Image 1 (tube, rainbow, N blue to C red):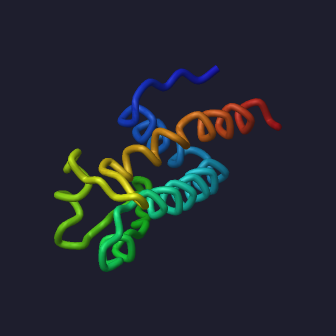
Image 2: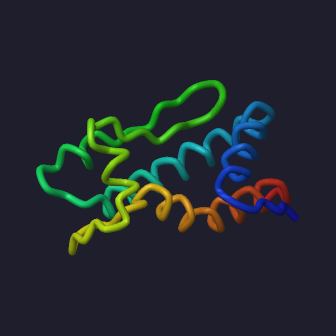
Length: 113
C-alpha cells in the first residue's frame, strides 16, 4: 500500500517514481490532464484569459500545471472571490479531488493490474 499525505508529498512521489517506470509517466500525464480539465471548470471567468492560460509543462522531473495570466495568483488566492461558475483555490481543489484516483492508479500498477 502507498501512503501519501498532502499535495506536496503526492507531487514529489510522482516525480520520483516517473524516473523509474515509463508506465508511471503515462499515469502522471493522464492525471495532469484530468486535473487541468477540472481546474479549468473551477476557474472564475470574466474574460476567459485566466482559464485559457492554463497548460501543462512537461519535463524530465515531472509535470507542472501552470496558469500564466498576469492575474492568476491573485484570483487563485483571493478567498473573497464569488463567482457562480468558479472559485478561489481552483487548482488546489482540482488536485485534491484527483489525489485518491491517482493513488489507486499507482497501487493498481504496482500490483500488476
